Amino acid sequence: MSAIDPEDLQQHRSYLVRYAILQLRDPHLAEDAVQETLVAAIEGRDKFSAQSSLRTWLVGILKHKILDMLRRRAREPQLNVAEGEDENELVDALFKENGRWAAPPQTWNEPEQSMENTHFWEVFEQCNQRMPLNTARAFMMREFMEMSTEEICQELSISTTNCWVLLHRARLALRECLDINWFGNVR
Image (cartoon, rainbow, N blue to C red; front, side, top):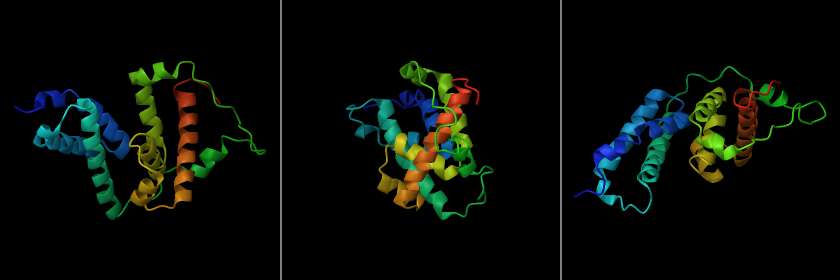
């Protein structure tokens, strides 16, 4: 008797796909990663000891599949060098010439409630998609995949300083995008 039923795995599929899309920014690759995750989970279901939730176990497997895909993609030539927007212009627009905020960040009245809201995550995904690829990847690796700076630098082939700059820019871009698209604050 196995520890889990394959039908139990399917209940978590949509969550895993959303998670993978945030990381990979490509629905087709995300589907592939989730499919590989589910196959690995079925093949290794006897290893599931139920010390964590099934979803947590599946996300752990998915993280490894995503990293494998990112490594493969890093070895392949990239066709889209420019993402269309200049990161520096985005960051500069947030501040006045004296270095102060053009508009201070808005407060979240009840952040826990937003985190449970499905629409919030749709807006978050859209904001993530608008960021340059490496900026979004660095942020997702750090905040969602809980990778260390050293691991991120190794995966993206960047310096520690560059990593911190990317993370800072990602947070600024997400703050701006969520401020406008989630909180409805006009700039």
